[in-house]
Length: 582
Image (tube, rainbow, N blue to C red; front, top):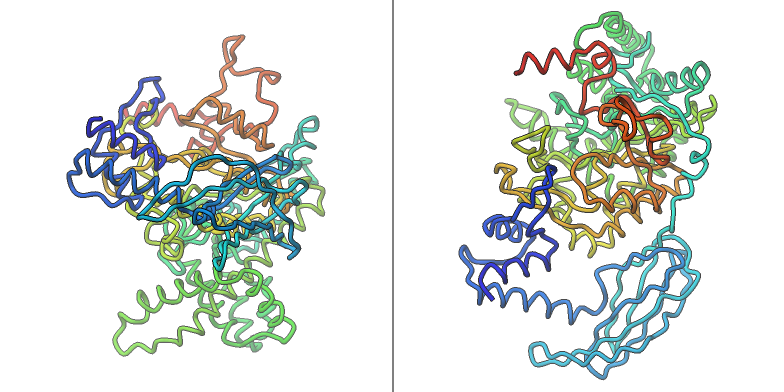
């Protein structure tokens, strides 16, 4: 075999595409340099110019490692499927396997015939045994446990639904709703920017006056913990936790802990900032955010009632270490960026800052829950629909705290196509497929569980990324990129599991370059697709697609956040802009 042949085989073993089909149908052959760079980014150790012998040795070592792995990295199975999995033990040693369910009860796995001969690795013979999952396992997060002699091993077992049932009600009774960029939706009393109170109010009005069933909002993900913040809500510092800029100060119970004079000052500040709502100019986000943070710091310093403290502690316990890690990152960032550079600065104790940033998330969780409750009480079938961004800022909290499960040396983007002829670099680090599986997909689960807790639905931006992601070396042109495959059955299955448990619908933004079978997989799982008027030409008549020609399981809209807003679309401003740009 030639050097390139072995390299492509090694790339395939790690899920790196050696060729792909462009949007115009042209087959792109990925260069050897791109394959080597991508493999290194996934942790494969290679010299600067590996020859065929070195590549073959690395490939053999990878296969040997798989043949001596006691258990799979994780097992994700569909409820009711007769799923089998292999275990590896020293040849001749016993292999006892049992399933520990998330409620603590146990089930025995049944051993199947496996006549594969033992393999020898580093002078040690290893045997392979096959086990079948027991029937009737409940949906959820379980554990496979292997005992062999004195050794014990375990891996995650996730049982996912065959189909997301929350979608079924809308197959014959379609829902209607509104998409809104919440920062721009301001009421009389908001502080110059839309907030959670406005979200609940808007949902209530839409439900009662227009019969709307959902309010799809822009990503609520947290940006920088203090101004200036990243402009795009689609490049957050974390996808799990929420941006405190959307807090309605007057709805926070701790406002009552302030003395009368301070409370009056806060209310006066709110009245001053609310005057901005009467203008149609740019939203001055950074000074508004700083004003809210100043008030929030003052509130936090006054403490909480025993009842509120108990609720806060319960929230911390529920969110676990992920919340603590996020708050610690925010606290460290504040110390480094704000306090430390100042001469003679008095640096606040880091534990106080960590507590402060956890408290902000507690408040966001409360106010988002209140908005969802208001939406459903007004008659919305779905209520608030969250928007999940593709990834995170490379210098943000998730990039730091989740680094073991990311591939930070490459960026997510898109190959060149008719709309972006240079391709796109979104600057976001992707999940590392193998490491995410080895973690039992818990980072993905924790993210979804938090986002779905107070949402009746979730829109997953670029859901195609659960199948494959186009990646390129950091700071390099998209033409140097290729696709990395993911276990879509695991990622989509876990998405369906967490949505099923939350009682939420799922909409996948399935626009762009993708393989033809992807939409069928999503539809079979009960995940709705996305149809945009802009792209929907009729196959039978000249002009837009007819109503009965649309996909049945899809969210249809005039536009998306990537395209001109509806008002601009109706006014033809996109045509004027295109002519101006040439």
